[in-house]
Image 1 (cartoon, rainbow, N blue to C red):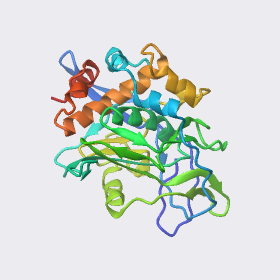
Image 2 (tube, helix red, strand yellow):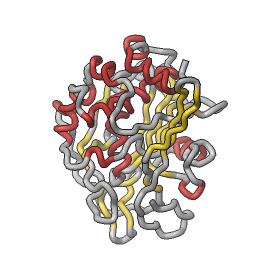
Image 3 (cartoon, helix red, strand yellow):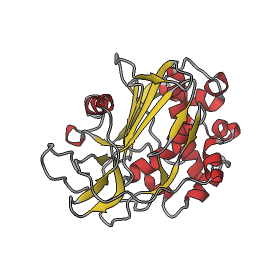
Length: 307
């Protein structure tokens, strides 16, 4: 991982990741802390570089499969992934991040900040899109793979880009920032810049993407990709599962497998999506009830101690 340098320093190279995820739950009356082998990409400064790659819209078939995971799959999987998965971490006493719903109401806001080159962002977009699709609808998803440069881990992880994505929901607002492309800019020695966060998004990132709010994240590794804030009430820094799980698979194969609960990739993505769904339900006061009272979400709530 590469630390975000001061504003006028040249960008630092990206190094390999390290375990960073933690999640906690009660089991048989004991508090059990489980360390999950997760990794994050450190954020670096960069300047505009080469033009971003041509945007490739996600096919209607894949978009449908990701947005329409059967309820039976969510409920069968629950949180019983064969691969370790971490849940978002609760904050305490933080002001709620809000936005405007598609109907114009003030609602809780989910904020994602990542980059197209980042393999951990690539892995995390799968459950994020699956979960949010239970509360609303996406349009404008694009096909993407993480960087294929030899310096990066988990090269070419299949995923989506949110650079042109739009989200509509009466329950929750969503904002995404893809800060960098997966195109290397030799002039700056880093990936070319893509989107910039707003002042509020940058402030939330600076405040919450730190060891102060993320247990187990060393101070030296503050400001990491991907960063997810669920209304500033729950946070996820890094991937909730290892991108290695997606190695050698195509986007089409992963998406098609989401209809099968016994698929080892599906149970990991869906476990993570159930955790995200449980968190979102806690923000929306359990709306819609068909999602928030489903067995899969109830299992995630129990594991996370969400009442």
